Length: 108
Length: 113
Image 1 (spheres, each protein chain N blue to C red):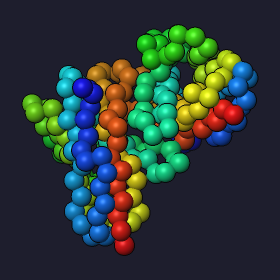
Image 2: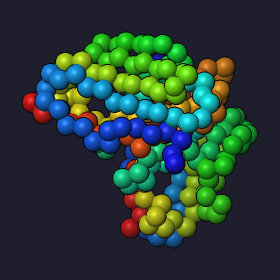
Image 3: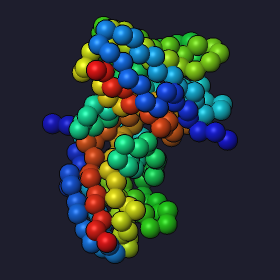
């Protein structure tokens, strides 16, 4: 079993829909990261959080430390949101452990 | 303030050649991580370095791979005698002293013919 599990693996939605991507982890962590990767592109850090909730524009990330679960939400989704979204966890200053990613496609 | 720089962005090598991948961390960052993304797979940790020290190399293949982060200059990931299975995207990330957040570079896409 992977230490970091994401669901769904693939998600296709219509423009404007509310999107939720889930991440569960099995190890103790000090921070969880949500990353975005466009096809053939680099990796952009969206959020780093260790508790509660963060919001940036149309993106919202939440984490429940007790349940070892995090969600990434996208409101009013747009075709430019199409990308792979990756959850990663770390403990202290150590290496990150990654989920396998969720491939999101937003249809106009 | 420049971000993490990696070069080259694309590298093509024939089997048996050497590949050298460079990573310049963000200004003021002294911690560098290398990650590998094999085709259709997730990112995997390779090695964590501070200036002149390897802190954790538990993700590095035992043979042909080495990494360094000298006092001056970029961090180098070196792959000797490359094989087709080394074809992947290699990302480095850096962070500052005492910080948790890692900032990623654009990656180097290595293709072995």
